[in-house]
Image (cartoon, rainbow, N blue to C red):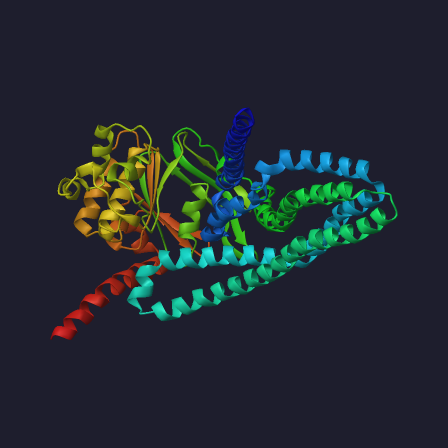
Amino acid sequence: MIGASLIIGIGLLRAVGVIIRRSFAGMAHWRTAETISLLVLQRIVSQPPMWHRSRMTGDLVARVGVDSDTAVDVMSPMPFASSVIILLFVSGAWLLIVDVPLGLLAIAVFPLLLLMNIGYQRRIDKHYNTAQKELGLLSEAVHESFDGVMVVKAFGAEVRETERLSIITGRLRDARTMTVRVRSSFEALLDAVPSLINVVLLIAGAHRVSAGALTVGELTSFVYLFTLLIFPLRIIGYVFSEVPHSISGWNRTREIIDERIMVDPQSLIGQASAGFAVEVCEATIAYGDKVVLERLSLSIQTSRTVAIVGATGSGKTTLLHAIAGLVPLSTGEIRTMSGGVGMVFQEAFLFAASLRFNVTLGEDIDDRVVNDALRVAAASDFVALLGEGLDTEIGERGASLSGGQRQRVALARAIAHRRPVLLLDDTTSALDPTTEATIIANLRSLPNLGATIVVASRPSTIALADEVLYLANGVIVDHAPHRVLIERNAQYRALIEAFEHDRQKPDAEVSRLYD
């Protein structure tokens, strides 16, 4: 009875120990993965926009998620670590005590396993690295494909897109197949080597018994003790087989963590002089050999609405991005009013969240301020018709809203954050002229607004501005009110006439179709 109780007690104690050991090991495993993921994520968000433009979103997602998890896979056998190490040392010492020659032969399996692991890593490293790289490429392609699902559907490109993803998936499959082949060969050797050593020990032990150096009982206990080592040897082999896989994930995360953080152009923007909202001094922006803006200078006074006009590729959007601190200057300096700028991009981006979140971006902004911003952006009427008002979920990228509604919500977002300078990159292009005029008039009435700078190609928008900056080939060719430029600058007049013609042409073509 006492013996049975001891056996049961030992079994229960061992079970509790396993549970505790694995629980803490699991927590350590995932906390380590979380730490690595956060390090990668913090490094990514610390980089300025120009760094993100050179990176694929899907690849960054893979490095934060899949690669970070892979980097800690080697920790999976850690719950066995303490008992395995103790068992190896105790059993190894006891084998040497029982019989030194046989003990040395048994212990020789450790350097043999080490040599096998070195050869294994040399063979498999390239395959694991290739597999992780292809996994990142697949993440890039899938993210891009899903992001452009409307284009894919509209042009019936599902088959082509499926084939493109299949090619990448095929390369990933081939790389992983090679890793499985190499790893299975290695693990087969891990199983075979201890068994072969056991056979050798039996043969050598039989000779030792015949020579009178060992008794049959001692040989039996010796072989049994070595048999106990087979499980921890397999655990060690499992660790060895996971090391290259984890290293491939760790290397990809370190590429992000170790990369130098680029200087944020926003941190280089200075304080504008009194009475001025924006000052640009001798600004030059070049991408390689291509000069986009060349020694450009301008000063915009407060309480002004300024339109930037130019042909496609003249540098209008680049100038706005430079003022917002999104792209770096090659030379020159930019200064703005304290409080920064609020920018509404040409393509209004909305999150798959509530209307309130898309205006506030999670900041603690009072609903009164939000509603006032929506009123200024001429969005109050359509918001009132939404089922849940500000709490309405608008879908991914604002899919439930029209293009003009998305533009107005994006404008309301910039207004609600009360930045003294508003930069509008053709923001009202999807609006009718009446709504556009209403918005411009509402912006003029904002008490704390320093200036509004609008990139525009619609003559009705341009005419509403106090001043027009005419941009050509990265240089401000002329600036004055619209009516003055129309009269004195032939190139500007030709451009405006081209704008008018481009807008009237579609209407004329539609009318001709129905005549």
